[in-house]
Image 1 (tube, helix red, strand yellow):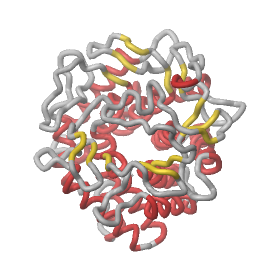
Image 2: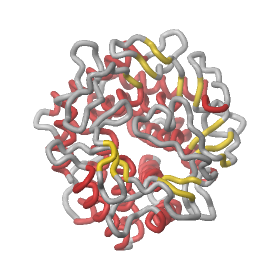
Image 3: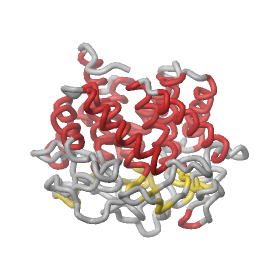
Length: 416
């Protein structure tokens, strides 16, 4: 697992991603590891995820200073091209050269900028990144926090006004965005130890546990009204399905549609938030329920790996296997095993890694293909796109190493 990060994922991106002409990173690579020749617009989410990845994985490189220099290159581009000096916050999308294309202030984008800046500041001690991380938190709380219903508005325009309803989704909230706020706030808290940051992290954690996990099934939902009533998920223009290559929207999706990979990811992120707050074990009940639901409904007992999604109270209806769900599932199953000692979760981890290693991980490059069928036939073989880079796959390897070291009683491969 450690080799997959150190000898595969990290060198794949460190040798290909740098855009030396325009700044920032390339993210779009085909199944042979070649840069796609089309125009390379850059999204705050993917650019930030590579900053986070290089900042976090640098310790595994032969020369960590070289990898941190790659992270600094990305931070410079974020500050120069994505930061909105007039209205504050971070733009959603720019051209390859950095010209604004979409200046919306999406909470999804703000959270990943925060995540990246906090990780870079932790890795380097750079005061600029530390200051910008705290400023991002402040402006997000001032402009996106919903004081009436709790949580955060997710889809806002450049001036921080709510987007329209419908597919612009100014009238919706989601588990996805609040889950990523959870990880960003945990990273920020580890940087600052600020009690205000701890309070906001605790609030998001409690909101997810009380309003976004179905008490009858233990599964997480997808989309909600502003006051957190579950809604049938729809295509959202900027952040869900519409812009993701190879994605398929389900016709008339059930209101209780759930993603098994999301549920397993949420489980270990809840544990991570508990740890950052000094409250280890606080979310163990929810973590176990999320994992048992995924094991019962989303894990493929025959071929290994996890399916994409299905109704919370039924069988999977999309049985393809995608890179990020399976990467996060490995961590989630190990976390559930840590909590419960149940060998079924360890078996599911091993089965998921076996499927991924055989069918999703490219044998030459070590990075993961985007999607396969249930049995492992490649559906989308690209190794990177506008939404995918080292974040899910590399982070999963790192988090699995931590948990496997603890399970084996070995010296930690990496410490907090």
